[in-house]
Structure formats: C-alpha cells, structure tokens
Amino acid sequence: MVHRPAGITALASFFLFGTLMSGVTAVALLVPGGALEGIWRLNPQARQDLLNMGSWAIVLMVTVSLACATSAAGLWIGARWGQRTAVAVLAVNLAGDAANALFRGDLRTLIGLPIAAGLIAYLFSTRVRTYFQPGN
Image 1: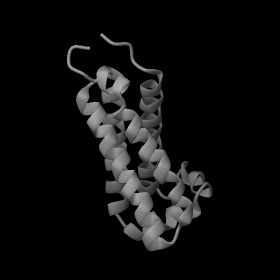
Image 2: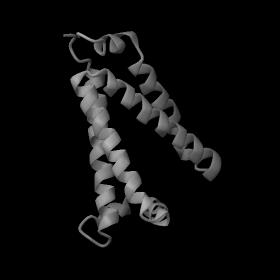
Image 3: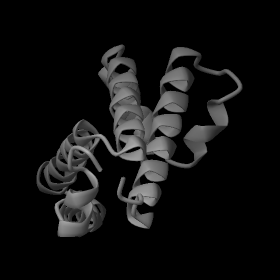
C-alpha cells in the first residue's frame, strides 16, 4: 500500500472540519436562540441568508455535512470514491463561489476559485492518483 500523502491527510482534516461546521450550522438553524446562537456573530449575513431559505437551509447544511463526511472518510482510507467525492464537493464549491461573485456581486468569494481549482488539480496529480489506484 502506498503511504498516504500529507496533502491528503490535510484535505481529509479540512473536510472533517467542514463536516463539523455544517453540522453545527444545521443544529443552530434547528434550535434558534439555543446554545449555538453565538456562532452567527462570525457571519450575521449568512444567518439571514439561511433563514431566508426556510427549512431548505437545514436540508442544505445536512447535505453539505454528509458530503464533507463522505469525502473525509474516503480520502482517509484511500478509496477512489473518496477522491471523486472530494473533487465533486470542491467543484460545487467553486461553482457556488463563482455564482456568488457573478449574481450577488460578492467579490470576496473570488478567492475561493483559485483555492478550489488548486485543490482539484492536486487531487488529479500523478502522486495522488497513484495513491487512489486499486491495490495500493
């Protein structure tokens, strides 16, 4: 078996963090005014945007949490589906950042484009592809 590259360990940790944060967000939306209410001080606009979505926001956050958890687990164990899931999650994030910049005029989201593109390129690099080959 090929040794897990440090970048894959870091990406799996990144997706684990995404799992936790989107899960906490879902719980905060489910229990308004609860113990997690303070998280909205970090980004009050996100709270308002999510509240405007209604119950779909909870569905979205749970979906994001599950997608991140799947990516983290798959990357950690070196499964090909983990690599594919991670690429898909990053591609959706890239598209979302581009849409936010284009349709909402939030140019701060443009920073996510080269980051997501770089992470996707890393996941397709030769060394990383070798790690995800069957039998490694």
